[in-house]
Image 1 (cartoon, helix red, strand yellow):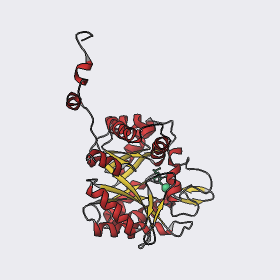
Image 2: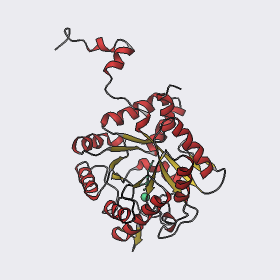
Image 3: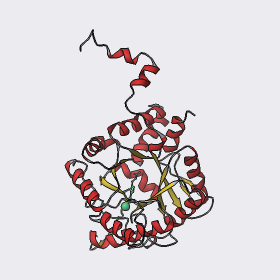
Image 4: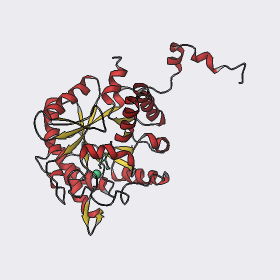
Length: 325
Ligand code: PBG
Ligand code: ZN
């Protein structure tokens, strides 16, 4: 049908028509809020490059998590910021590590809020890499045991789901294995399957104090130029036992989200990362864009591309918008 028989504007003429033909809608159910846990009491350190985001001690962490829960957000993604770092990232898998303490406190106070824990070593190692360093190389197989121990310690602390973000080969199988051996076969794994080596992580590394002290993450995170390789990574993780697969970052990789959604029959998550958040906040502050509208348009685009859930620092703001206040 062509103009003038067909006039697409007929169904755009008022909001009621637009609502009736709307194809994509975000809901609070799709949102996961990342939070940063730090030791201490009454701590709420603003993260300069991420306005509205903070390093929070457990008491304040619970307040923010409660706010998210009350808005209908089903889950948070927890990152720990330890007091001490060492070459083996010991505090990542310590029984009384920051992530473990924060997890049990959260589960104790808000039992129905899903706590997903980020499983990685980079915040906990003094060199800032996501695995163990040997002769200046990130040793894949040596790192697997420690990542598995980290995941297990999170499960023991009460985490509902673990999310390995290290990008070592074979870590999903190793984590599935140790969880199953320790009666945690009911704990799902959300794998950061296609995690690109991205400059969009800049603000996060400031927030989590996790920048590598030498070199970069190119030997383990994916080359931004590759799409077919993402399918291979995702397929491997599924064979190893992943329950949810994640694409990260989100906005510069919408094509990857779309392809993975078409080819894969597991739930797909997308991580709207720190740099994506910072850019919108900065342009809004300058008065160059309408931050709220760009936020909603961005989240909608990620959902439209095929993500079933979105990890985003905008979760609380977006939930308020969706709830109409
Ligand atoms: C660490 C980790 C990173 C992010 C989540 N987990 C950063 C990195 O790989 O350096 C990035 C999150 C964000 O930018 O919001 N493995
Ligand atoms: Zn890491």
